[in-house]
Length: 254
Length: 266
Image 1 (tube, rainbow over the protein chains, first blue to last red):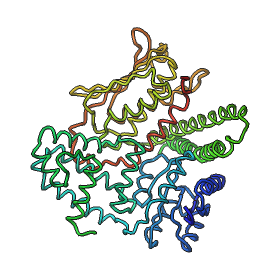
Image 2 (tube, one colour):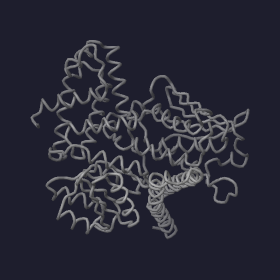
Image 3 (cartoon, rainbow over the protein chains, first blue to last red):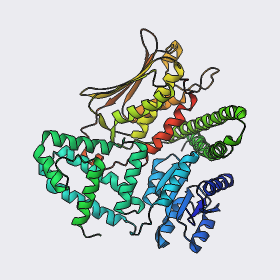
């Protein structure tokens, strides 16, 4: 963590101070700055861009979401952002993720959660890809849909819906502006730490197993399409990752 | 707008704001506690360490309790203001039940909670948050009613509906309570406000489901949630799904909801 810069934007001064001390203590070499208002944050970010921002959404104006919108417009490189909020409303959290936050942490959170999340994001390799904007994301999804559409006559319609749902869900992770590679790493982390209770993942897993059991020719086609060996049992994550890879090859994005 | 309605809405907005404001100090307390436990507790004399750990656990438990109260108050205010509406998405109810029961079981050393799930996964169109809150509240209500008794969570499917049944072998509901099982208690000298059960009923209604409570012939209470089966819902609804962050948040709701309960000794 040597030299990595973290900016804490938090209007509760006690919380700001505490978080700063904990980060300095637990992540040796990390440089932590704190500001308490949106205006101060803006002034700071015009001078230097930290690797990570720990951003409270309800700060004196401009608020957290406005600050993120401003960053998206002006920043040459989006820093990683963890938003912290006391607001349980999912639409606010969704909006923060859409604007490029990597994580949304609901207050109050434990020290291990804070340190673990900051540490993980700071250790992620620098993302050189540009932000996947809405249009680009739509094109990705269109591409995946097209590919799957070519296979629909071989896959049960129910399964097709679930795969698309999975693709859509997985792309939601991509809204934070990370590359497909970082995306799959992130999915790996989420699955590893939080268990596999993603309904889309469960549904896709069930679908794959159903296709394998009930329709071996269709399963072989899927395996061939995604380069899976006959004796290999691909996990859902692998399956989707291959799906994305295939979609990327078909398109000329990278 | 009528003045009474305006007053009521303002009161609800105030409740929501207070509930949100509670989270900042709770965050400071929790981080201070964690920091103390990690960096100072190991250096205390052994005799004091055990006692201090008890105090620290007490702080942690009560912060989670503040979080739970804050969550319930926010939900109440948002429901009253018509802001909290179901966001339909396919949810694997077997997974959700299994995860929440597992957490509850941990507190009881694997004893006392039976989770009976169908072999086939049950995936229905549902609001995951609403379902989480209903099951968490019903379970913590049962755990309150019979701290050492048996609790069972049953998920059943029929062609028409999905049934979630939470049963306990505690003392059952009093005759007074049985008449209005989901009405909040504004003055109570014994138990809490029963706001959790009140919210369960609100959430069930929003899900077009029904929730009822009854006493078992051999003692204990049973809560039944009847969910109409939405498996064959419109395809477009499938694409509105967003599960990001949901599991992470659930973990937090679970730990807040079960904060009241001490871990059973080995």
